[in-house]
Length: 406
Image 1 (cartoon, rainbow, N blue to C red):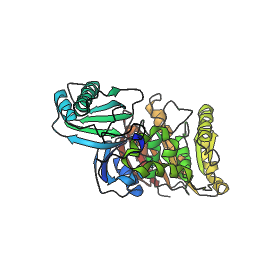
Image 2 (cartoon, rainbow, N blue to C red; image 1 turned 45 degrees about the vertical axis):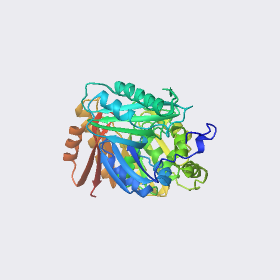
Image 3 (cartoon, rainbow, N blue to C red; image 1 turned 90 degrees about the vertical axis):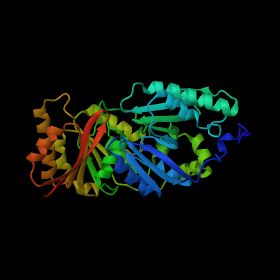
């Protein structure tokens, strides 16, 4: 590999790589089980283990393309090294300095360190990045006699380091940015990640043939995500620039071609207009329509600027016009940061009650207003409640799944 022609380096596979690889998949904390369930439906997994916000999977390297089809994952890394009992910058340097990067980075290429730190330490993630970067440079200088270039803005190779308490992970970034970004043009001030929307759809046990209502749709994230799934639009086809194609080509020659086929050979699926978003703010509805058009799903979504409490019974009464039974609501309501608890309680109670009275089967929603939600739940009869705790941004929240017994 020392004599690699730089002009051919993009299409030459790393010979040091095993047929089995371990990937680190990140997600919003609390969604690990949903992510693993989704990944298991996409690819055969030889082994796995989970930590908060992290799922490690071992798979055949020719199956990596299917991992990028995940709608819940945020970032994907090829794991190079794990070391425990790491509690100082010197130990971080020594571990990374011992790794041979000469078969990972070519001499003409640039690199950058992306670091994360979880737990209590006497140093910062910036300190880790600085020390790790120097260790990579020194390791490469020792093995190749070349000083690697650092490019923080657009590196050829991104090396990921994560110190989780005293466990150090070193990997190669297969994504250049989080895959939750779905190229929206309009953002709601309190918008929901597309990856969380996808997790909520999965938690709701939704399928494309099931119509949904989002009574507080904001920028339309949930109906649009459902519509993309229904049309068979895969995440790589939306986020191809977020994928490090150069690295994938070296892992397995067919991975990139597989991703291209996902986009090129997408089936032409005929879907009725059955994914409905409602918002009382016309500005948000206008933004949702813009986002739906930009994503090519404006033909199967419907956005309405009205009070959801008034519209939901109407939608239910004419559901035959949509050609499908509409009995599932999935939404991201206000959390009450600008609203008094009493008003938030009334809003949640009225909304869930109108869904129940309109013969909806299930409601799934995310909120950090946990005490208010519990009071609301205690006030409604004949319901079955399940929930999962997640970290939404920095907010401890729950995704609630409420089944109405009508």
